[in-house]
Image (cartoon, rainbow, N blue to C red; front, side, top):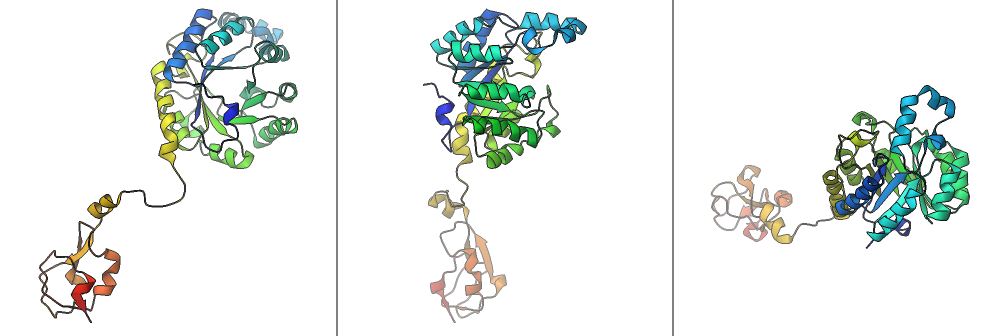
Length: 339
């Protein structure tokens, strides 16, 4: 059964939602894009995400004239806009959610009006692209907003646009480097964002491997977005920092366990009583003690099992006399004592 992220919005606790960020790791190959969707589903992801940009929607003509190699790559590694309809249909067929990141008003219109998407992703690069955020917000669809490159003021401004339009939104903590140094990750920001904005917070992971995603999950991240590839050695922009199918499966499998692992905040004993008795200690005699002897602290020892008098009661014993002889290691009980 597919889990819809929007349906989970109001739930304070839910199993983390895992997004396989395919981006442009299809390298412009439609069949490879379908294969990536299939493998993301097999790995256990809740959702696949694509980027719909073209060379013209993302780069200025003058910039591309000066960067001909980039234009060649961009033209090669992007899909035609109408191809995403078929990819969306395929994702629906194998029952995995489909979302995308638009980079122009035209792409927003296509994703919402043609593909009927109810959830869009806004990339970190567009955190301060308030006209684009406003345009999406006016469409009344839910939004995942990445916060890479952002100052707190920029994040708050973007959020204010979404709130003003009464948009359900999710934030992703993100470091927009590929890959970022671990020292820059600042995963503690996840809980700060959660407390500050009171919405589900996730982590967009650009690191190599699974450690950062696993760490974010243990900190309570509600969403993990991880770049995904079939082969880390392929030519392209993001393959080297992407998760392989096995790595994505590791993240997905761990995410299913995380609610039980994190448990509750309040402190209470969860161990079985039999384990408590087995592992804790009782007060015992440190030596053979005769009846009538007054007990000194040096006469006490503390050994397993804990089915006798707890060590916390040692002060009640010191200075008292024994009613009967006790062997070394024999439990000292209150009924054995007299003043």
